[in-house]
Amino acid sequence: MRIHAAALFLALTPALPAAGCDLALLLAVDVSGSVDRREYAVQMEGLAEGLRDGVVSEALVRGQATVALMQWTGASRQDLTVGWTQVTTREELEALAARIETAPRVWTEFSTAIGEAMTFGARVFDDAPACKRRVMDISGDGRSNEGAEPAEIRPEMEALAITVNALVIRGDDAGLPDYFARNVMTGGNAFVVTAENYDEYPERMQRKLRRETERQISTGPERVVPVGFGGE
Image (cartoon, rainbow, N blue to C red; front, side, top):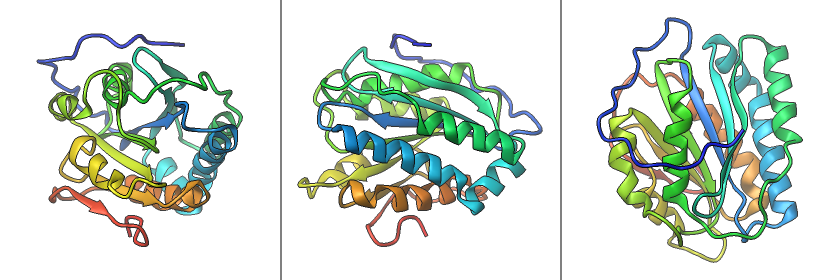
């Protein structure tokens, strides 16, 4: 199923939360040209193993969370790969993790359009069950170089009560975590986790999912989570 990016939403009011669902979590995976075959596999396997983590899986099941997966690259190239899937048992969580782990890659050689990915993600949340929290989890290894600037999309995400967190693969760009913190991260409890390279991705994703599945009981200032802390 593919949803084409459209105009931004200026006056939408989020639905009231359903009694059962604590978290709607949209996992957004970078499949731009800078990501090779091995790095794509590392992302998908890291996501699957992160969901299987005992702390994460318990929180998702207890909170009757709903999870979706999208792939994104250049402008007009975003794909909803796994639609909203509610997790109420360990068996349902394992089935979801297996789907993510084996999801085929949609694109291989296009640009990096983070703002377009955020706009697409907002549309995906239109079809999500009403939950107490709505979180978009973006992984990326580069700055936006096509389409709308992500900083321009942040006010719309805030208006829709969508928190945007990020896992940044720093590589050779020392300023990349700060770029994501200033331009992508959205919401009072939002945060950025940094991996130095793709080899660190699975462990950083596990820590990030643990933090995202925790119940948020207060609103604090936005901040970057430096490497070595990973949200803990």
